[in-house]
Figure (cartoon, rainbow, N blue to C red):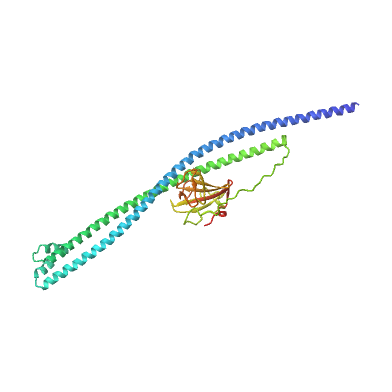
Length: 386
């Protein structure tokens, strides 16, 4: 009897001990849970701070992009002026050649006329020829000799006229050449300014990339803390497995037909829809669209009918157009120099929506064309037809 009582007492004490151990473990888990929550809160604060700093730098990059667009427009205007000036100089050169040819023709006519007069025993002319130091002096003397006929006088006057035309054209050509040199100097200065602005932009982008990396580290720490928390919660209060009703994964498809090419006359692809090394940071990434290089200011066209859901600045993408084509399908046109349609515009396939540029995270003028289906990027070649 005593033995049985002893065994019951031992079992009871064992149960109490187990309960106490469980209570201690539960307390420890709760403390860990509280610590994890504090860590999550602190990490979120750090993320918010980094995002604010990122927004400041992104605004600075946006301002630099605006300067780049303005300078590129000035450069384009200067190049047009230079082309016009070259054409003016070419025309002036042709006129100069014509004036010179006419001057030489009149010179030969005058000389022949004087020889004829000499043969007619008008020896005063041969004396004029040999006593003149140059042709201009010859003309000046000849004009004042009364024996020259009216025809001779007319020829000499016409010669003077064309000789003056040659001089005027020479002076005009020199002025135009000077103007062209000034334009070249201005263009060179503009290019220097553009290079400096772009250098500032890339330095800012480097700072931004560093902050993004730090932000990713914080996010990874947050995810790790969340995973640990979930494991501990499962250990304490295991939840029953519930069967979720299956939902249809069938996604709506675009029914509007093949996309048209977004950048007419430019078909080279500088970066495909595939893994690549980021041209700015050098880090490995998956390029979620295709890059179509084109000249600055060239038109960017809507690939299909739709409604513009974004027309403005998007971090990283610069000036961006997003078009909703229905059925969960959206196209993106990024890095533009300017946008030609506002938010909410209904656009037709082939309608211009932007102009080629290099805003945002970009190393040159191009169109980043991206296709998203239900919010997920997909291969543009499934829809495009060159």
